[in-house]
Image (cartoon, rainbow, N blue to C red; front, side, top):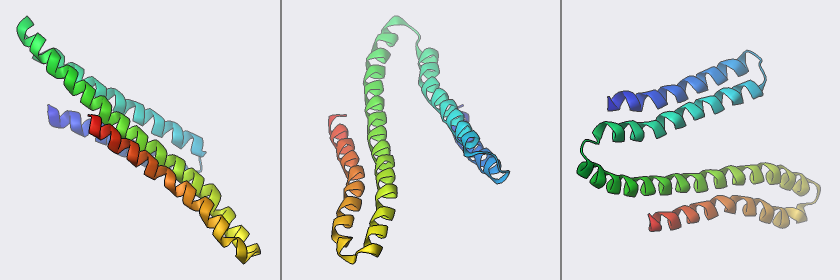
Length: 147
């Protein structure tokens, strides 16, 4: 049962990547590939969050067992939410850093090709964009210390 619940989200992700690659190769817009990726991500989230609910519903028997399970389940849920917060902090910071570097690096190369003296100033802006993921990682480490 547990292996099936593990394989299902992985199958959703693999299928979404394959469908997106097929759509782009066929000449469809990237918008449809993005829609497939988002729907697959939503399906993985639903399956991932539904598994603990189903497992909790099947294991609760008596009221005393439910009380002890509820206490441990609350601690487990808090820990899980902390892990999700860590993943979001790191992931979104890395996406933001990628966007910053994608905009800053070509501009830095262009400025350097016109005036070689502008290399130092341009490099600072690219390095600032690369520093954003480090801040996200630091926030994740701080959250890990609290969880």
